[in-house]
Length: 126
Image (cartoon, rainbow, N blue to C red; front, side, top):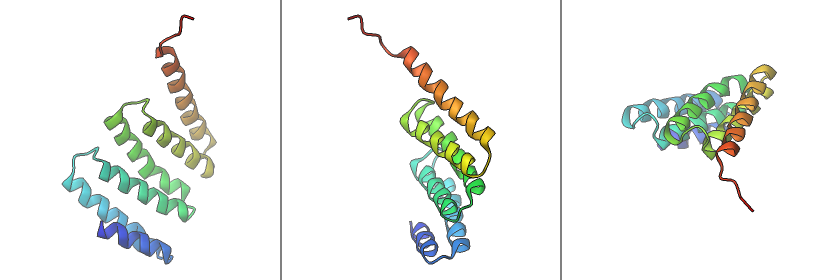
């Protein structure tokens, strides 16, 4: 947590390089200490992505977002709210980075998941 506090403070002061390095070191240590899909690892990936987004580095931010997405899928399953939220974040980043094709693929995945969930939901017989 100390590294994440340092990263946050560094980012607020505009020292983005130190912020990024502190988040990456925190992530490295958490990957050694926790199981792969532990919430602390996911949280640190989200913090790293937010730091990159704050700098306008949308393309760079896609990598930690994609990694967090895969860990959320593993932890919660494909149609969980946290997975859908992460997919929305990824689509947003692709769009901001100018990768409209990737954004469209992610939006299609979200839509397909919503359609599948509707197909699986119980129907009222009234």
